[in-house]
Image 1 (cartoon, rainbow, N blue to C red):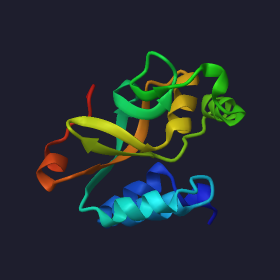
Image 2 (tube, helix red, strand yellow):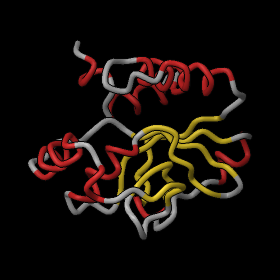
Image 3 (tube, rainbow, N blue to C red):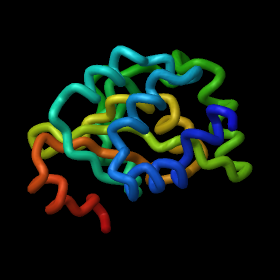
Length: 150
């Protein structure tokens, strides 16, 4: 099984059904393409309660980087995004469903931990939501969560 097959909405759903979503996140973040094993280890060692995959409105995801006018920490000019964002947007427009993004709930906001480029590609392809898994600091927050816009 390739990494692209390992990390899909379907495999995230299967991991959630087995109560192994934290391990799915750790493996996904360590995989080629994500290449963020340190973040995976950090999230795996925090006491987080995971939910997902959930359909999350793109405009509610607070991204580290992104285009002006979006909920981002650092605004980046459209031209500065790597060419692979445009390539991925084309693939999304052709029907590709990229791996779920990884977010955490902090101070009542969805903070995108991994997936800035996927979210931007989805936005460029005209999508308004992204599949994601969300880590919560406590079980009650996870159990009470209703994705915005649903």
